Length: 79
Image 1 (cartoon, rainbow, N blue to C red):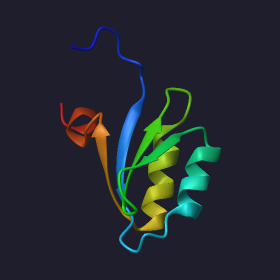
Image 2: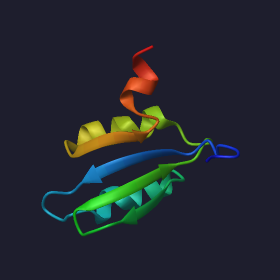
Image 3: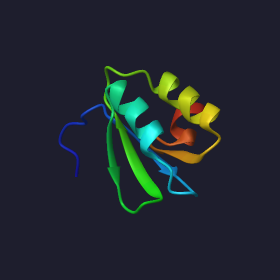
């Protein structure tokens, strides 16, 4: 059970070729935290002070496979 939500948002990213350092450096510079489960699967924690839209734009330009984990796409865009 969640007592109080932190406001952080979570994004999952798949690096098919394992070449992640450049993008991880960019999102960390934006103020996000990153954690790798494997060399290909990473989680990006986006704090409330960082624009989710800007992080998403960076990921869209990267052409990587990624998804919003919390909040989900449905939470944001399907009412």
